[in-house]
Image 1 (tube, helix red, strand yellow):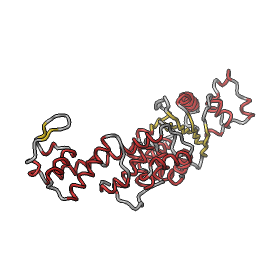
Image 2 (cartoon, rainbow, N blue to C red):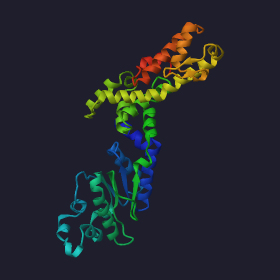
Image 3 (cartoon, rainbow, N blue to C red):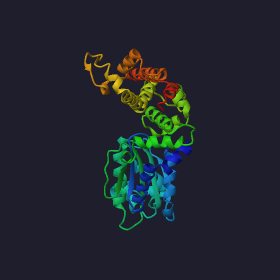
Image 4 (tube, one colour):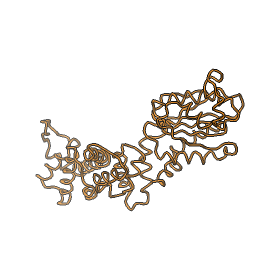
Length: 351
């Protein structure tokens, strides 16, 4: 899936804009917090891409990546990684206050010439990291080169400050971006645009717009539309993903996609049929709806009422009546929270 991750971080417009803004703040000398509401999609590719984008600043800096998962003392973490044992022995809390201040004022500390990218920072640890890097930056001598930090956080409870810019992933990425990734991945698939849109919607819905998961699902291409439960179950098993009530959730995701794409086609069919046979239909009105209301306007006829009138009074061709019957069955299926098979959708010519 590395190619999909590269596609996401290097080609998809809003993901690229997210990294471009981070790059811009770093070039201005500010550290950045990239805050996500879920796991970072293709984290390794994100850090590699950002490193490449910052290449023009690498004459005086190197790019370090550290997994900070579970780190509770951010200052201690940096102190041990960027101060030699000899330098650490020189640190005295009563003299230097914090480790961050000691590193900031020690010209031998290599951290000053680094981009320090820290991944895996949880919501609970985000404030500790924010305070740590802020203390370090504030303690650095004016006009001196200092470390620039890139923190990848999940639900961080921090806000932009003088030295640190917080970029919210959710301000850049929406459900639309997940769909666009899926559409791009199947752009060469041999089917029409509506079928590609439907397939992308199914993948996005099942994944609940989780970008990486949607990418895994859409890789199955048309097989996902044909056998959504089986494909999802296999994909999840192969990637160690657990989902309770998988069949029910997949069925609901498919149903939602069908409501979006099929219901408008059913409504158009109903309206077109009424427009074509409006004068004939008027002769057989009023009729009574299932809830006892009188219907005397053709435009208000539901598809089931249309079928009843047309079947009884026989003014449709056999093929028209059969299509009306099939559309009625499809409408009732969806109205009862059930899904149509992909082949049924193709037979109905609604995709």
